[in-house]
Amino acid sequence: MKSALLRGAIWGLVCGGIAGSLVVGVELGGLGTADFLVLAVVFFLVVPICGIALLLAAFAKLRRRALQVFVSCSVFALGVFAPGPAAGHARSHAFARLADRSAPLIAAIRRYESIHGHPPDVLDDLVPALLPEVPATEMPAYPAYEYEVFPKDAARLLHWYDLGSRDGESFVGLWKHIDGDADHAILVMATDRDGTVVQVDADRLPQTFAERAFDRSLWAQRAERMSMVRDLAKTLDPMGKPFERIADVLGPADGFYWPTEDYPDYAYGGSIERIRNWAYVHE
Image (cartoon, rainbow, N blue to C red; front, side, top):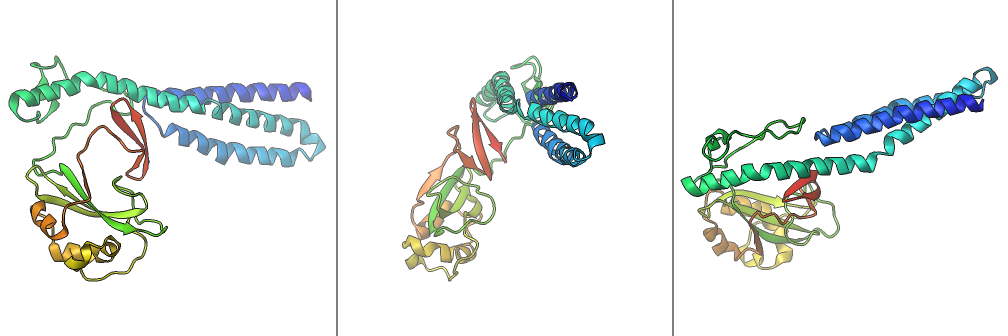
């Protein structure tokens, strides 16, 4: 019996170690979904087998083989989970190396913009004057860089107004913006380089709240703002208007945000991991 259990443990350890090492390897290539695939195998295949093996162990004729299977699957699960921290480190290391390899490409884009007054339309415009060729990412999951030039009317600056506390209620939708008190809702207006409003968004609103018509005289009372925010969007219709005109009605924004590399801990529905000058969003 002991030798059978030992053999089962060895087989489980070998197979689990191979599977765990495979997870680490694919994480180096940016294939983060491997974690979930392995977890699915463990929970939907290995766990039921362990349960069935324990049930069969109640029968004397099957006990030896059933316990061997149970030990083998249990050790396999341990072998899979053991490299978990290493897999996370491998992913971070892979993206850190990508950030380092991307530095010459980013520098070339900035150099092109300083020479021509605008960024290149496509990365091939950098060749051969600034780069001998467009580099590959060397990440199997993302072999080529995706490059996009935002139009001139794209959002450049975010202005936000505090809409007051949610009073402990959960918020609707994704957490898109980091500004202001985390327990408060905010109204965000994005402007382009000319100061024209190109996006309006009420973020972190509670599931339910009282609504009323927009009243300019009450807007100064922060506790009243949330109830008026939806009617405000209809009444002022900020889209396409200079933000200065909106500020004449609402007053100066409570704050503004110009995108930088000073990333928050949480945004866009997930936690933020800082990797060099980049941000990795864990959705």
